[in-house]
Structures are given as structure tokens and as C-alpha cells.
Amino acid sequence: MTAAADSSLALLRAALAQPAPVSSDFDLNAGLNPPLLRSLRPAAVLVAVFDGPSGQPHVLLTKRSSRLKHHPGQIAFAGGKVDATDAGPEAAALREAKEEVGLDPDLVEIMGRLPQHETVTGFAVTPVLAWVAAPFSTTPEAGEVDEIFSVPLVHVLNLAAYRIEGRVWLGQRRRYFTVPYGPYYIWGATARILRGLAERVAQCG
Image (cartoon, rainbow, N blue to C red; front, side, top):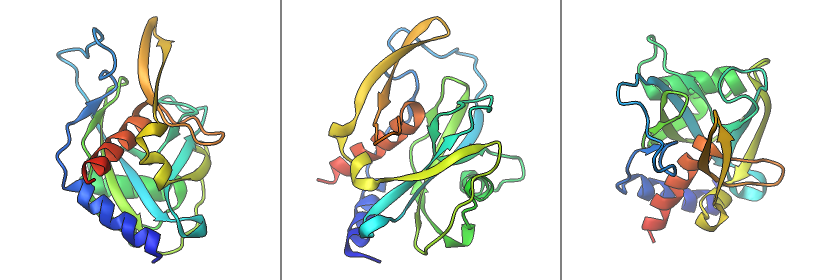
């Protein structure tokens, strides 16, 4: 493990100990409240950090297929719905990462859970923070993932890299966080989860 990776791991572990609220796609949209009697479907994503190029930690991300029903073409973590056969969010995140990007669960060290995030599409997403210690290869799942890539951890932990933007969706203008990187437009729930992690890291000083 490189010195940069070792330092980042220590920082992430310290961040996990910081208090943090749950988040929602509705957070930046005053007056647009979720239905009171809504039924949320449990989901989980794997926020996988690993030793990337030049020994700098990176975060694994995907570009979802444009043919998917939910969030087509968006940048996302590997993940999906929690099945009845899953032992919990961690098991679901590992299973989905294996299916979507071919990541071997045996190479993954679970560090902890990040606060749950509610999406406007009716999912209660549990982000599972993890470290991938060994070198690994990836294979995108046909029909689910168009591309697999990574972003430097230092970029998504930089609060100054985030912006608030908006667009009209179902006749209403909605605001959301973005954290663009190169050709990748990272926004919505993915950006909000990453920003939540960045805020906790910032609390560590």
C-alpha cells in the first residue's frame, strides 16, 4: 500500500466516526417534499476506493446503460436493489458490484456504511464504503453498464469542486449537486453521497 493510500484510509476511517445526517434528492428543493405515505425500496451501492494510477487512491464509478429504466446513462456507483436473499446492504452492494463490474468480493474490505440517501425515484440507498486492497480487473455487465472508470479520491473530497445546478424534471425545476470530472458529469444522488463523505472528512480537520 502506498503512503497516499495509507493516509487516505486513515482519513476515511476517521470520517466514518463523524456524525452525519441522512440525505435526500429533496434536500435542495424547498417546497418539493416527498409524499408522506411513500414506500421506499431498499437499495445499496458500493463506494469502492482503491490504489489508482500513480499510487493515488481513486473511487470506482460506472456509466449506466442508456437503456435502463431507472437513471439511464447516469454516473453511478455499482449497486442496486437489496434482494430478499441478501444478508443486508453490504451483501447486496458486493453482489451488485460482482454482477455489474466483475469485482471479486474477496478483494473488498468493508469499512462501514455512509448515511442513507433517498432518491426521487423511490429508493432508500445505503452507501457502503469499502477498500479494494489488491489489484483487480473489471468487466462491464452487458445491458447494465456502458463504461467503468475511476475518479481521484482527492477530487471528490474537495468541497470546492461541487456545484449546485438544476433542470426541469416532470414539469418541476429541481436542484442538485454536481462534481464534474473530465468528460464525466457526476450529479444527483452519486454526487450527494460523495459530498456527504467530503463533509465528514472536512470535519476531521
